[in-house]
Length: 119
Image 1 (cartoon, rainbow, N blue to C red):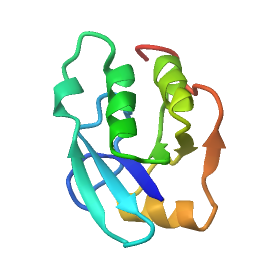
Image 2 (cartoon, helix red, strand yellow):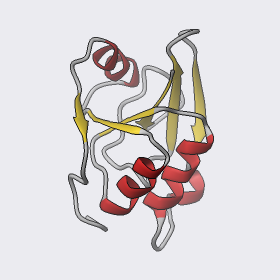
Image 3 (spheres, helix red, strand yellow):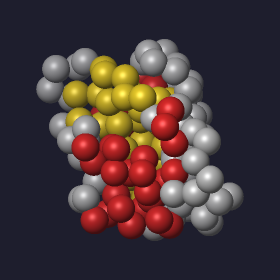
């Protein structure tokens, strides 16, 4: 399984980013190999609108089956649900810590947006 994590940087030791659509990087963790891959999301950092939708589409293109983040807006949630990508909440820590919490079943699964659009 591939799990994408909203990140401030390009390593497993990077901090989680509280933004989904405007996170600069997503670290994609492969549960089978234990490897991380950095996926650039820079094209959405300064989008006037639609960053959540485009980011969700980019996550789907990585083959991720789950995504970990702190905040998910309604449009991003719709795209992720349509792509059958499960969403999990994690408010702080590093990418590696979030992945460990995910593997331990300690993260809350999200079934609806937890913030409004353009929060």
